[in-house]
Image (cartoon, rainbow, N blue to C red; front, side, top):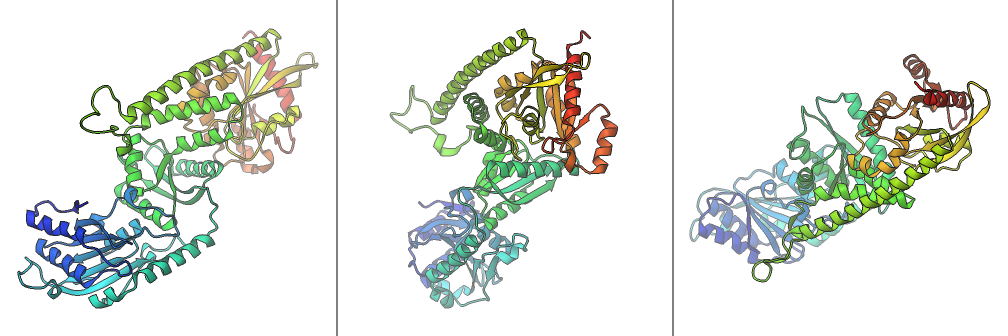
Length: 568
């Protein structure tokens, strides 16, 4: 391998050859550099009148040569070995530059982004062509040694993550025991990593939010708080939340270039394994961001799909989740690098063959077609069950609402059912139907209705989920009436009402009359309660967990059924 990176355009052929010769040198494993290698680097830098960087692995092999500063020649994150927050990357950078100043912050930031073992900066005196017969040692003035420091507090200034030595002689740098330096550093990093007590198997997450002109600060804050809960529900640990205000999203990277660099640094300093954006990302944006961060990047939709995949219990639920995931994945297969390029190249590979990408796309498309057929059969089965209920003339009420509003807790309290209920987002995926006696408002006799618990809604519900769960959501459109449960204790309860109503309005079939039930009354403030009563005078106020207001709710449900059955 003899590729030259960085600002090599305009160099002469013999200068390129000098750069390529650096690849053929090998350093002792226990030395940062040697006088001979430093002189070779200085000679080339002087000859081309520019800085030169050499990247060396722990076996002493030169694996990358670049023209320019460490910031201009750095290794892309996806090409770097990634060992976790307790290790360095196993590569050091030796750079020769044509002035005698200490390393700039941009070079040290590049060291941090790459998690380099060390950065050695050799400063040179004089510029111009390398004089024939003059030794490179005549140009070496001094050297600086920089390396990273473990820091548990991400609020510290970025400069606190590294240390830079005073100016040193070349001999002092070459006498440094490289193994001792790296082993000592990694022992410190490991102690700090263990002290954080990170659970194995959990993604360490950085959240990213973008506030555009279309959203208020309160809406953006609420959405990010919800995303943090989604990540927690999915089994991740949020390390930090990073936000930016822009008039609109950047087409390539969502956030601006400076913010991308900041996030990349936080990925390294915090040991993050995943970056989650609070919006939908295009396949190109995901690819661009992953190249910058060196870790996986997902959007809000993918987190929700992951939760659904974990929560699905019944075969019908698993079926619909798989369909949603595949429909989400299909357009995102493009641009996955060389792994998806043609299987071979040249003689023997042309003709009727196809690419890995085409093969995978075809396999997924075939699976989607089969799953859609199964969902259609599921729809037909549930439709027959509904028709049987309708023949028995049993009124049905579907419980709808934002996720974690307390729908399952309510149906358990009303019917003594054993529906799984937890303080989690999307605890219920599969619809559950239970009988409930309610008083007839006319005869005052008890009549039986069917209550169906449904999947919770959320703002920006992914279209693939809406489509995949159409068999489940039809329970909503086919019900005689709806009971809309709202978590009154949630700071964004008004936005949640709007999100649910928006989804209901987008249903292919108009839904029946709706009764609003404000839940978690015991946790709401008196100010919030007064506001809700003023804006929604026909609503009922309850606490499902404390069994408050349930008798009033039963009476209201009886009235709702009679209203739904009336001719007008």
